[in-house]
Image 1: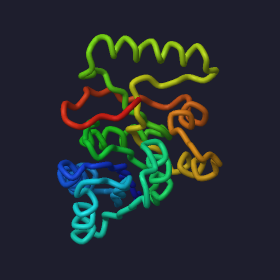
Image 2: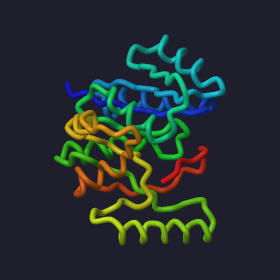
Image 3: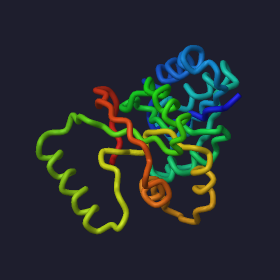
Image 4: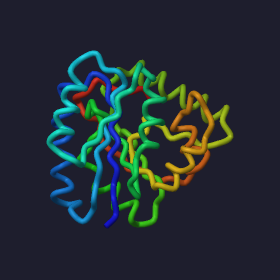
Length: 206
């Protein structure tokens, strides 16, 4: 039986983490019931009751694992380090604020089973105003001009990664690793799934 690791970087997500767990659990009891899974909740030194919620979930379900950072690592480091703790054949990265839809996991798995080693989610819509959207578009144009490798727009890392890429991440020696750089360098031909922006959540930087 193949195993899917669901990795969830968290920071002050006490209001959403239980709902996210319920969604993940239902998917592996339904459309993904042929897969084993683990749910890794990686808390980046939250100031609210997130860790208490995570401990409660761990006590209820042996599929749930907790990673508690000893200090605030920051978004990129928490993402990069938590993914390396996964033991599955593929790793699904989704964030605790549920801004990106965890319900799309079966679609990501389908693309992975078709032979795609990296499947990335790309937002089609945004709640930001026109000025911010314009600045973000200009940012990506500059990045494309400066970089000799393709960059995925409107992507925060939400997606599914084969264990082969996770092994590459373990071998990278970088104190400030950046997932999007790894994707552009080692998986430039990754598959993209487009989706609509979730209205809830505190948001993540792209």
